[in-house]
Structures are given as C-alpha cells and as structure tokens.
Length: 619
Image (cartoon, rainbow, N blue to C red):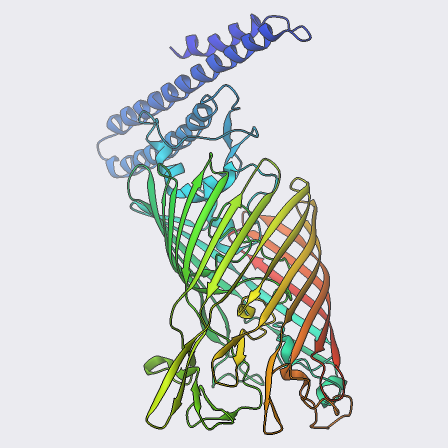
C-alpha cells in the first residue's frame, strides 16, 4: 500500500502536461493533479502512523518477561511519541483539507510555531465537516478566536508583542503550554527592567501623569529626575477547553506589580503591590460566529488590530507605562457580545462596561465626607463615596448606569477599520437639610481607528481618535469627564483625543516606531459672590505660574491640552526556544497647555529618555 501511495504522486508529476502561456485547460489539470496528490499524501500519512503504532504494539508484547517493566516503559514512551506523531499528522491532514473548500481557496498550513495560516487572500478554513479527522478539533477548537484572527488576512496580522496574546495565538505544542486533561494552560508574561531620565521631577517613574507635570513656579520644574523599577514585570495565565465541537471557553488572568501600597518603601525594599490587570472569561462559537466576554478586560473602545477580539488590541510599542498621550483605553468590568459576518470580515459588538465619572471640583469647598463638596448656596453635592470592607479608602463614583459601547470593525484584504460610539450618564445628588434631588446628565461620543499596512507586515500607519462629552477618562492623560453647574448638576466636558503612528519592522529582530498623540478638555464654569468655580474658568489666578515658589497658579488643575511626540526602537538580541530577550529605547517630548486665566495661559513641557530590558520566556 505504501509503495502504491508513494508512486502515485510521482507518476502524476511525470505525466504533468506541458504548460503553455494562457493555457487555462493546463492550469485546471495541474490544480486537479495537486488535489489528487494532496489526497494521496494524507492517506499515506495516516497509513504510516497506523503501521508505526502496530510495530510499537508488537514490540511491547514481544519484550514481555523479566524486562517487562523496563521495556513496558519504553513501549509506553514510544506509543506516546507515536500518538504525538498522529496528532501532527492530523494537523497536516487538516491543513490540506482546508485548502480544498473552494475553487478560489489555496491550501492552508501550519507554520513552524503551530499557527494555522491561510496562504491565499481568500482562504477561509472551515470549522465543520471534519468528523473523520477528530484531531482537528483539538487544534482548531481550542484556539477558535485566535485562529479566526488569522483568517482576516488583512495585511496587519495579530499583535506580536503583548503577553497572553502572543502565546495564546497558536502556542499549542509550543513552550509555556501544559495540558491537564481537556484543559490547556498557557503561560505568559515577561521580566521587565525599565528606567527613565526626565528633565522634570515628576515622581511617577515610567508612568506619565501629565496633569502633575510641574510648571515653572514649582522647584520640581527646575531639576532632572532618574527613576527605574521592575514593577511593571507581568504575569499571565490562560486556561482553555472545548465545550463541544464548535465552541470553546477560556479564562485569562493578567497581573503586574504596578500598584503602590502604604508599605511601599522606595528607599530600600521597593516592595510594590501585586495588582489585577485583566481577569475575564470568553466563550467563542465558531458555528454561529458568536463571541461573549465577561470580566475585566481592555475596554471595547480600545483600538484593535483584527476583528473585535480580546488580546488583539492595537497598543503603542512605547516603553512608558501610560503608553501615549491621546491613546484611547481603559481596563474595566464589561459584558461584551460580538457577532461576525462575511467569513470573519465584518464584526459588530455591544459592550456594557463599568462607569466611573472623573470630576473636576475646582474651588468648591470640601464636604463632611469624601466625595462631597459644598456649593456657594450651601447645598451639598455627592459625587462619590469611600469604599467599604476590603476597599476602604478608595473613592468610588456615584453612578446610575453603566457605559454602553458599540463598535463595528471591518477587515478587508488590506487594513483594519473601526467605528465606535459610547453613551455615558454622569450622576450626582444635591442635598439640603431634610431633602435633596438627583441629577443625571447624558454624555457620550464617537470615533474610530484604522491600521494601514503600507508594506504588509513591514510598515504600517495607525490612526485613532475619539470625541464627545463626558468621556475624558478614556484617554491616557485622564482629563476630567465633568464638573458641576451652579445648581450642582453634572456638566459634561467636551473631550477630544487622537493618535497617529508609523511602525516599521525592517527584520524579525527590530521594531522602530514614531507616534504623535493629543488630548484636550473643554471648559464649563460659573462665578458666584466674586468666586470662580468649574473647569477652565478665565477668572482663575495664573499670575504666579512663572515665578518659583509662587502659590498663584491654578494651571495644573485646569489643563486644556497635552501633546506628545515620541520615537523609539526595540532590538531582540536573543531569540530561541528559551524565549526572547530584547532591549528598547524611547525619546519622548510632551507639551502641556493650561486654560487661559488671570495672568494668561501658561504651559510647561517634559522631555524623557526611556530604557528597557525585557525577557519574555514564552515568546
């Protein structure tokens, strides 16, 4: 049988008709012969594995006796190896079978790292009709959402530098992957040693909190600052299993040490607190093309790279932990419902996400409790409250409804495009002795993003933006969402943010990038009894913003806009089965403008040099 199968393809090759220019008949004949060769190759692969198993079984029986234990263990090891070979055979079979689904579809194959890839622009491997090759389900089913991300063939491809994303997408059979019965565990993360040299003392390390950038009236403006830490080292774990033939369930944890605690000692132990980044479950059904996510994850407003898929967010390659001024993002609780159409090209999503209004309460008198202020009329406004139990000393906002986010994503054969919208409902209560009134405002906005693969997988341009009212906290600068009106009702502030970047990958070892980001906040204010209130009030005193140690400077709490321009590069100088070791450097310049007030519209700047060494053992 093996001889016949082996000689079949050879005879077909020898009998290949001569191909004349423009000879469609010859092309059709060649395609038919390729199909027959692939079919016979699959049959041969199955036959060889079957024979190998039989040989192993006979050897195990023949070596029974005094050496039974020794040879039994060896036979078991050999059978396990052959079962692994059978699994790889299933992969090869699946690859060839995917290629025969349509006349305009070229064969699919698995790359060296186990990724299922489509070699033609229209290739769309099917998730059904594979009852005769059950091994396909263990390869495709367990990674349905990651395989789908590779079917877009939009010239962009999945994000290569995030932790769980890179391992989870096709890591089956690779290092950092363990199998516990029907559940697959996938490890991710990296060891990070980063530092920054800045021309201002910002006291925030590699995380930029632009609103705290000092103006000239502060001594911190006039001194450089160096700070380094390993606190942003990251750990991630994914668990995944099949629910049935078409659906999978997965859970993701992602943590780092970015949180500070009351016991953090920056002079000796540098003991930063372990913090939650992501924790969510995801259900994916490849038959109905339905996807569900519940838990803490990147907001659906965060730009993506393909479809609407977790762990495929479009994030800048910057070293700074705050990423980039104007970057749209948040990590928060959500319930996300996604449906895709047209062979995973068109995606629609609805996400119900946790709401948290960020207020500016300039010049209002503090109330008797945290989260309360007193109006000039003597009324008390409650916008938040301290947490209880395990959340003591954490201020939680007063919200009446979650944020509602909708998104449409489109993946043609070139590029990735998104449009999105959000509704937000700022809410507070205005109280007097013996009574009060609730106030709810309606905010929201819209935006979108795109990735243009100028040279697919080599050079790409990224553009993203978001504008609206009451949505400032979704930008990296954390400009306020709202302030208060004279009656104490929420007053949503206009917000505008955007980013643009060029990213180049000249070879697999080097990434080079340049970004520009911008974010601004609107103004809303009133005056009462000669006193200014609200955000951006032109009566605020800015007369001392350029005089050191002067206290007459309201600029820091009335930021109008923040701009950042940055360039950087990563070099992977070690890469192999042991993982990847890379080094990065980044130059960043930020300009912060305040709203004009009494004394003008002051500004300040921040120049930074970031450095990073990173070991990614599972990539």
